[in-house]
Image (cartoon, rainbow, N blue to C red; front, side):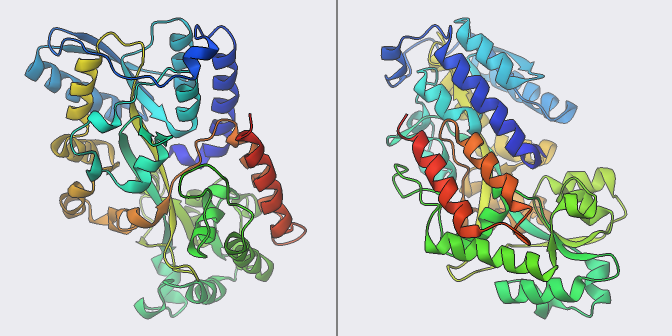
Length: 419
């Protein structure tokens, strides 16, 4: 459930990494502006270190098992280091000149690492790179260089309390496949202390409606931001309309912290969350009956958001041939399915989809939207620009001006490209 804290985490990562890359990083300006390319090295007898940001014992054990399996096949060893604070620990390791060979590359850290010359560009050296979902590849590509293969991903969908749905007299014909149906459903489900739709007050949720309106965050070649567009405005105004009607509220407005507890506590009949909600509901609200459906289509068609990270290889690693072999193993079809089974993540390779859905039918609404998902912005410093936007989202039903919000976001984000 990392993404429900994305705004705060992104701000911390951006500040910490920007500072680390500019102070005592051990890299000159010239090095930071160069593209880090993998170097040759032995593929057996290497001793690798891998740093991960683990969600718990299940993930740590799964990564350790994968590392041991690859080691047995190749004659290498891997020491897995679960970081308590991967941003801080990875930054310190990079600055000290002894980075882990392989690591989880968070999207919010990605461009900081690239600009500092600390990330090797290995994406095109991984087996069948075209098999990764294109939006995920886009998230880890700079200047047409594919740096690190996506590890796994999440998308947003709509979760619905099935008891409340039936009590409102709604059926499969009423599923929120369009904006009009979502609004009608939210109205019927609102009342008696229940709000039809409750979702987090952040770009990481309302942005999905901007995409459904035909909007985007950046242009195709990732050189300009496109927040201040008629399509994005239409999407944000739709969210505002629901908020003004009282059929959409944000968690703080119903005394909750995120969409999951809003749904689980009965304060919301519907919410918008990613597939991390599956584990959260099992742990926190095991008796709750709910169904998951894809995000609706808007004037621009279907759309959602994706959240991902990648398998990064340090530019200073002396074992890059072995690193690439290891990452190839980690992103293989069989290993992606093992991670999906043990951790609950969605595979980043499209060829794994059918097998994944067969084993995890509850994930189908999430992975079916992969091709229509817009990835997170990875531009250095964007967290602060997003934070200013997010602070206004909660007021969409009252004083916030969508056009002004998008103009401010456009201005703040564009300024980052000039630095």
